[in-house]
Image 1: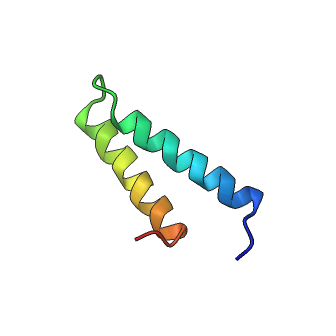
Image 2: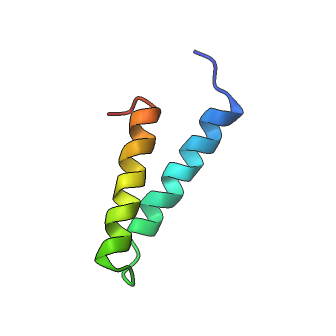
Length: 48
């Protein structure tokens, strides 16, 4: 399997979202939105 710049970008975006989800000052709405983005990105990357 070839590893591309798009793969790297997706991985970095996923990592950033997971780190952001760990922040304490997020509202429940923000947490839910970030969690949804993570779920969608993982599905797109075929990680689930």
